[in-house]
Image 1 (cartoon, rainbow, N blue to C red):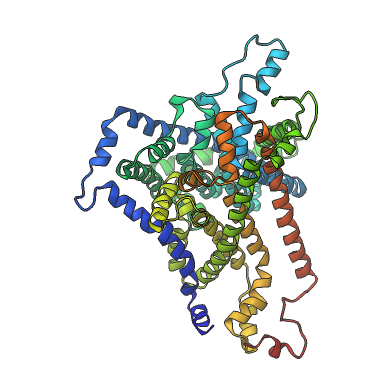
Image 2 (cartoon, rainbow, N blue to C red; image 1 turned 90 degrees about the horizontal axis):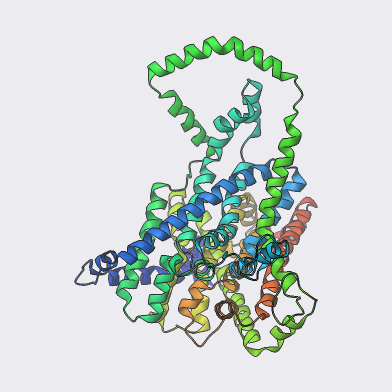
Length: 603
């Protein structure tokens, strides 16, 4: 207990468990992997030169970059106006739309990929509808090509683009745009000169996140694309499963990591804040050459009377285009929401099919595939494996991540940024790189193919999610409450348990939920470290998707589609109860106003 109290008095000591897991399972193996890639201790670039010596490898590398860039661009084109319309909607509509974006983001990516195989297949929804309408006589080739890969990847990563944009746009002061309009600026001009520059940090963050995630895509290109649509992640996974030489695999992983690192370094996240960025925009405008500036001012002075008359004429003119604009905006948002949610609904409806195979629309409704799931030992065993691993990951990552977040918020700003960046590496690096490093780390520990090994590998990302969510909660925490408790002779541990913990409980529960989701849905890292003796539910689903023989996967997919609703309801009621308690003036446990408070919370 004394050692724990000493650690509590040193904030960085609370981050030791998180960094210990990170170092043993990921960081040290990553360094070892790099040394293997350069043939240490002889140190040569043979593995890298061997990769670039084959034209097929270069083709796969450029194809990976091309697909990632184009997917990111499509997400930005769709995600930015969607986020803008969500922010400018009414309060109720905005909250509902954010929930609708969250649901597919929390839904298993494997299930969403499976849904697109059903929609785009030769006997899928689109081809069946077109044939029924006599538009085509034979099925179109919509699956196993590059178009299907783009459709599936954009569908999975689009929420990752929308959510950061919405978060930053909500913080933009709308009075700035109103001020520009009041000075005669047209709506489009006010948007591009005021609102858009303030949203650029979110554009950069969302673009980087989507691009890095796309670099590590593995399942979607494999399930929806053809042989010519494979990405570097597929190549790395295939080599790791078929070759005993880690040198080429390590080189390929670090080539992919180098691309992600370059992007993060060159177009890194803007931590200076939006206002400073806005100031930088105007500063750059003031630094224009003096000749062009004088010319612009002269032209502007000549045009002032014309703009004044035009502004006066438009001031009291009824806006006829507002109705059409609102209709188009509503239609656009509805189409985006349908694109995000419809595949999951397809899986749910098909899971009740009464036929001998999956069809949409179902010829009849039955629970046969749900009975098949619960009566098949292979499916139930995979489900219990995933449930047990998910619960263990949740307990471990929530405890370790909460301590790390608490310690990081108590350190200096410079140290906090650096250490947080290290903890977030498992979710900012391409997932295939994390998987290869975890594989090597678990080989060193002798835990390949064990539940404990999978728990440690999953905890890398889960701890990062918990740290982010709990740290965000602690950022709004009033530390004067802790000081008040300590002034009444409460020790640091008692203060945390009786004061801090009740107030940050919603953030801890949110972090635990995200930790469980990230573990329960994980398939890429699990496929590398599970061996052949242990099957989780996502691995079982992937196996059946490849074989395409068991329609039970539709029932499993429907259950996983409905799970995010349960997660969101859990988070909502947790936050609602916390808010009701706060509004009702309920004091945290151990801080009531009774005279015996000092004796109750004293260390």
